[in-house]
Image 1 (tube, helix red, strand yellow):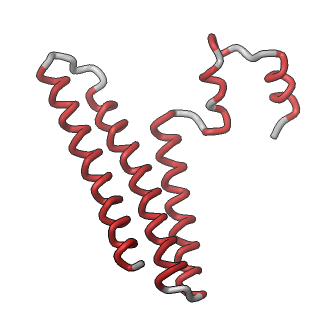
Image 2: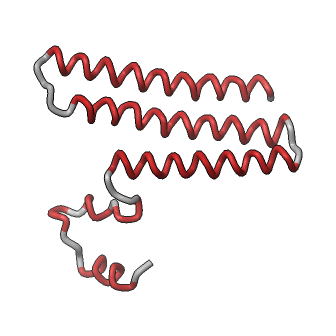
Length: 127
């Protein structure tokens, strides 16, 4: 299982590197074709998404290590702390990239941003 954990860790790092490189390649292509608008946002979008995916894979590696390789209370507590930190990072990155908290994202999916009658009722009811 230690080998499986290492494979997951390597995959997580590869996702981070691939997203970083892809972001810059796409930005370079856009700059060379004369599209300068949105280059920075494009890099952030590619790299931000790769960070999110990489974090998820690295959490899976930590989970495998804790459960299968080193199942102690101390390693479980360490895993809990790591998961909390990475969850906070993922949540913050998602808000940064999307510009809206996840529980309000459905508003962007409604045509024209208007609420249907059932959505208004849910909105008034609160969380």
